[in-house]
Image (cartoon, rainbow, N blue to C red; front, side, top):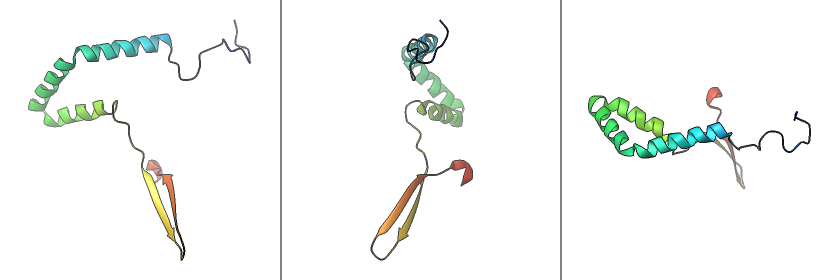
Length: 95
């Protein structure tokens, strides 16, 4: 069936991963869960030889657990009777 405007059966809903993506994510999660002890050993061995590389690995892995924070610029105008504070995301490319 070709896509037709208003056809609710065409495509998938926004935010729903396709079957292959879901299978790959599940397989990767299982791989990580089954190798946690080995990962600790590998990280320890790497740290003994190259501490900076071990730290780099930890930082890369943390991106999947801890969300990145966006920068915010704070400007304040002080008048006789009130303080007005404007917050807006800081555009990293156009500081």
